[in-house]
Image (cartoon, rainbow, N blue to C red; front, side, top):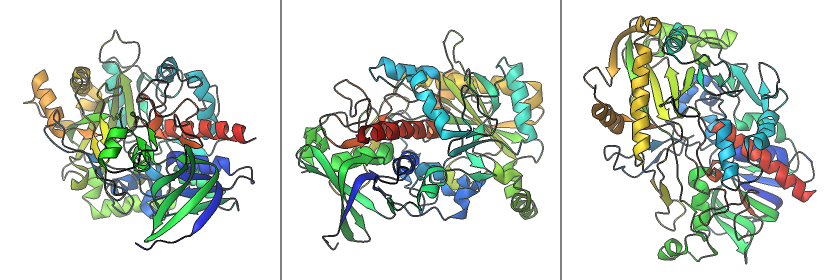
Length: 537
C-alpha cells in the first residue's frame, strides 16, 4: 500500500456510519459550526433491496453490504461456528436488519443504573427514545412524533399472524398492542422502522438530511486502522481508502461507533486493551484496559417450523413467478403486500416461569420458513416461530487474530454456557408448542417440520436447539459502560483513563436488553450527542 501524507482536519471524527454513527453525525452537525467527519468502511446505501422492507432476505447474506462474520466453534452448540450478519454500508446494520422497533424493558435500564451508571435508568433514557421517534400512532407519554426515526404499523397482516395471536391468547398470553409502552409482556404485532413502506435506516433518518451541511464530511470505503494518540489523548484516526493511508486529525474528540465487533477491534489495534494480549501481538500499549473485548453477549434462538395447510406463506410466493410479479406490482403501485413485511410480523414476550417479575422469552413469528440463511426459503409452504431467551447469562470474548487490521477478530460468544440459558430456551420451545395446539393456528398446521414430534423430552429439545440454533444478531457489551475494573467507558461514554475518546454504540451496553437492539443503539447515540453538545457549548 502507498503511504501518503494526506491529512484532514476536523473538530470531531466518528468511526462507523451505523445506527449510532449516523445518529451522532446528524445531531452533532446540526449547529452548523462543529465540523464532523464520518468514516464508513462500507459503501453508499444505493442497493434497492436495502430500502424494500422484505429485502433483508437478500441483504442479510450480501457480502457487498454485510461483513458476514463467522465465530469460533461453540462447545455447547454442536461444535458449530455461528454466522453473524453485520452491516457494511451507510446505516450499518440498520440498513440490513429485520426492521423491528423494540426498546426492551424498563428494568433493563434500571439495572444499568443499579450497576453504577448514573443517567441511564429508564426514566433517564425514555426522553431520548421519544426524541428519536416519529410514531405513526401519535405521541403520548412513551412515544414521540417529531423525531427522525419513522416507526410504523405493519401494512400486510397475513391471516397466519392473526391466528397465531388468537392462539397465544388462548394459551394464556395477554394481548399487547404496544411492546414499547406500559409493559412489554404479551403478544401482538410488531412495529417496524419504515416510512411509506420503505426502510427508515439510521442513514435515511439522520444522515441523508444532514449530508447537505457544509460542516459534515462523509467518507465511504474508509477502513479505519488505528487511533492516534498524543500521550493519553486521542488526536485522530488513520484509515485506508483504496490503498492510500489518510489521517483525520480531531481537534475536539474521536468517537468510535463501529459496533460490538469493530469498536473493540479498533481499540485493540490502537493499543487500548489488555496489556498482555497486546504485547503478545507486538502492539505498543497506549493504555492497559482489561475489559476491551470482554463481556460479549448475544441472543441465541431456535426455530420451531410448521408446514402450512394453505399456500399463505412467503415461501409460496417465492415458488411462483406469477405471485412474485403480483407482489412486485402491489408494492410498486400501492406500497402494499408481502414486500412490506419485516423479518418477524408477530411478537410475544413471555415468562419461562410465572414467578418472574418480567418476561425472559421473545417470540418472533414469521410467515416464511428456512434453515441456514444462505440456503434460502424452504420449498414447501411453511411458517415458523423463532424463540430466544432475552436476558442471556452466557458471556463471550473478542480477541485480535493478529495486528493486521484486515484480519477478522477471534469471536467466541460461548452460547448456552450458562445453565439458565439452556433451561429458558427449552421452555420457549415448549411454550411455542403449547400455542400451536390452540385451535386458531392449529387449523393452519399440516405438521411440525422442526424439531418434529419425535423430539419430545427436554434433553431432546435441548439437543435440537444446540444443533440448529442461530444468532438473532444482537451482539453487545464488548466495551461495556461502568465503574468496575472491567468497564471500558464511564457513564459519559468516555474511555476510562484516556482523553478525547468515546465509544458510542451497542458495545457499551453492560447487559443485553430484552429485545432487538437497533432502537436502543439509536437512543444511546441521541443521549451521547446531547452530552457531547453540552460539553462543547
